[in-house]
Length: 417
Ligand code: GLY
Image (spheres, helix red, strand yellow):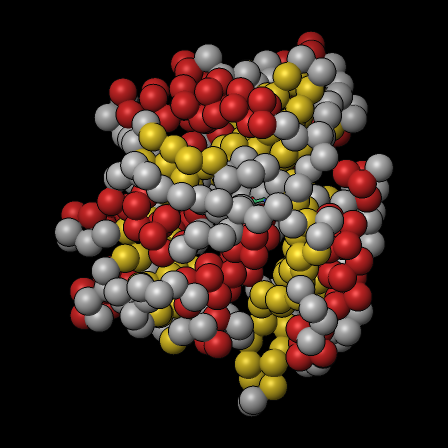
């Protein structure tokens, strides 16, 4: 079966790596891919956002399944366009992908579905929003409603900080904001493979979103994922499935915009139970890399089942081992950083038992692998326990070299405590 995978990050390298292991895979194309995906299939020089070109390519190459990695392609309606042309594709429609592309939509959806989330209000003008934060006080959370790649959320410790965040949003791209109460507790990433109102849950994992150790500094796209989480129980997973995922899928289906693909609720476990911080409408990155390492079943069958709208009898078994995906970043990320810096040491890192290195921001220039993004690699490791996986990942991370290499030294530290 010929597959087209859309995207260019670590998530897509991991998906390509796992798809390549499927006994059912034919040709695998990745558009546009990165320095690592070319080892799993053929990179195609097309932007993930060029829906028209991607569709023409899929038709020409007799692609049986297209798999969409990034949220911006979904927001452009890639799933709608492929389905209209009679092609099978993994991911939600533009309407269902609003779960991620509009935070205002997501909050209203949660209210309608009775899903636990922080108390909130939405605003489309700065003065009203400022008046609300002055009345509500700090700490408070300000969110740009639009897609801004994980960087649209500001946790404000003072009213002044909230006013500055609002000013920044309204004077740049922002047209709508969500202002919500600050919640405390460990964050958890939930991944549900969905087909309309039916779903299957992957086990919970945890990302580390801030750039600095001790969860300090700026928000990033996510720079470290771990599994398993010592505080998660089957009972809690069942509760999350029934009180969060199921009602959201039902409301979307009832509205005539059923969700298929991957629904990723980002949760916070508060003293009064799990609450939704946000929804994502695709696999998390760095979580996907970790899932592709622990998944025992055929990813092609799983993605195809969702795209076909039938999850009956689907097996999504994950191993009981510990696993980590440690992201190596370019110095300066999530702000400005240099590109084109030579990279060495991947082979040495992958010689270590249990390690697979996924490329994210890399490319090849004149035969040399060089940096090409803020998140450069995902160093994944499995071990008997999370602690063992972490030790192995750090050992591997030290073998990879490029100027300005940065990674957090405390990934998983809180969970191990
Ligand atoms: N793990 C954060 C994200 O994928 O948005």
